[in-house]
Length: 250
Picture (cartoon, rainbow, N blue to C red):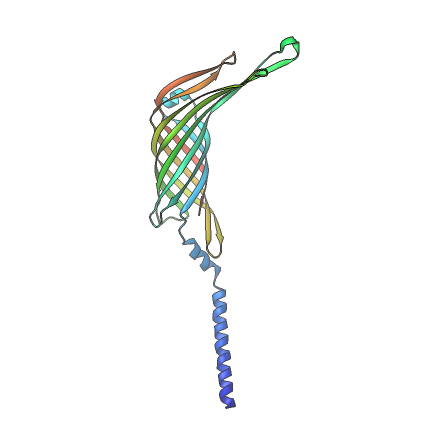
């Protein structure tokens, strides 16, 4: 009886020991394997910000005679497992301006007064886009886009006198646009939190060709008498945009 009891106890201890080893092995599952599994989870959403250089084309360039610089904000969502995404893109492009200060003798000889006149030119393309990317690229990701939307053209002038009431003038117009773009995302950093959180930060390089309809737009010039002259033009509003920025995928 005692011998059978000892054998039973020994068997139980062996079984418990084996279970303990199995549990420990499960607990000590290599983190590398967990990381690989997390990285295989599709990243559906993305948003980013880019520095933007806009180069008007053809007659649009002849009238503006300058390039624009600004920022682009964008975001979208992939319908996994389909490699298509839809999103929204807003470009804020500054085409410069000027500030002039006009000093004069105040009445009664009490020092100098100063009036300030400032002009600014801003173009804002707002677009809805559809993006396609190859499903077999993860670290270096090329993509193509088609987009359409409206462009806002605004030129403003502000008059701030030393004495008297300030004044502002602006001219705003709109034009429909459409176009295509090509880009490349290069993964820079993986943000992984076990057991299941995964995000990445990518360098994003993109070129867009925007085909704009005809529109009325203006430039502003400050005259020597503090007045502002608005020169109005009408042409197609085609632009090439070069973008460099950061995209977060999640």
